[in-house]
Picture 1 (cartoon, rainbow, N blue to C red):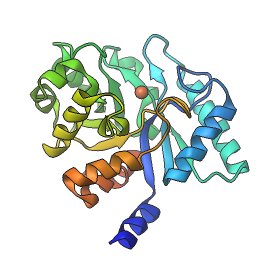
Picture 2 (tube, rainbow, N blue to C red):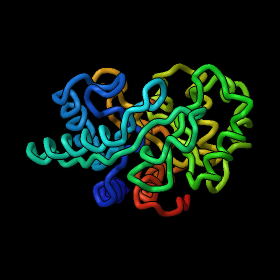
Picture 3 (cartoon, helix red, strand yellow):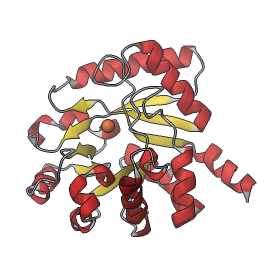
Length: 247
Ligand SMILES: [Fe+2]
């Protein structure tokens, strides 16, 4: 059984769809050395691909800056033989005009990572997601288990989800890093089949480092190892390839 699990991870490679790994763009690492240190941690955990998802909120970082940052980091990782590939993306604030968002799609797919306000779920959430769908995006709601409105009433999230609107929870939420309420919400959403991805939302080597395996282990206890692995392997793989997510 253990051999099967290890083989599954090594064969597929884990993918982190939400990671603040680009240097000097947002509240992630300040310098390239720290980005590289984060990639080393990710590689040691079995992560082979990372979507760089800087906050697109108060500052609309140019997609070109993100693309160049990704290229620079990939060059540095290749030179150092760190087996992690970075792909472009963004963590986009939900209320932004969809017309501004084309350059922040995950690996140039139709999928886009969406951040709602940390304080509540806006009453306009359905309409915001609809506007994104109209523009051809497939929204992925980032860390809903950390949103106070959803913690109080997880049904609010369930009503938003569809084949075109998916949810990503944070690995650290499953291991209690955000407290018992967030952990309970994350585990409950998993049990209800509401979660399509587990990602790190890493910001540095100290603050929420890019480690998926601990969260996957907790998820495996709830939904089984195979389904838990899909949340960090085949599902994000489908996103990066621009294909439908099946599980
Ligand atoms: Fe984030």
